[in-house]
Length: 151
Image 1: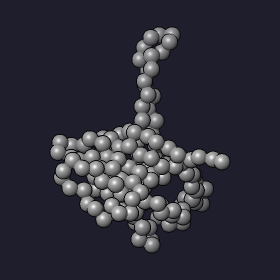
Image 2: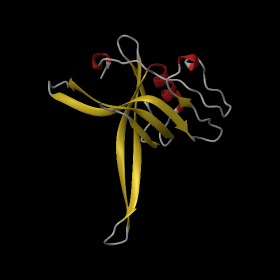
Image 3: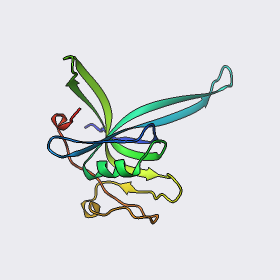
Image 4: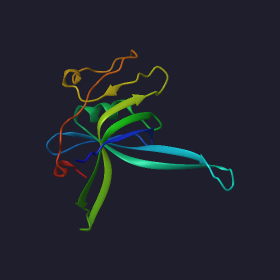
């Protein structure tokens, strides 16, 4: 038995980037920062370490992330770790490890912004977020081959 599940809560380091594959599938990429703090035992000084996580989101969920997330906004992400490879323009094999998001919850935001919880639930796929403070469940269970990735 094995488990590949990631749960993180962090802030976006830049605005999301939405692209479409040649077959028309939406894919959104963004980075989340998570930080931990501790007191150094020797000096007693507060220490902080920030990790950056690459997030990839597919389908309707990708379009919603692109629409409602922005640099500095908090997001809660559940998904799985995946590594993919490609050849760059010079013919070198390149690799990246990223989190393939299956659930994204928008946290906080600008004044008047709502929180949206997006996860696997086909019944809610066509609901658009409104200006009220409701949560919306939308997700993707689609598995896309790395050949569909346009970059």
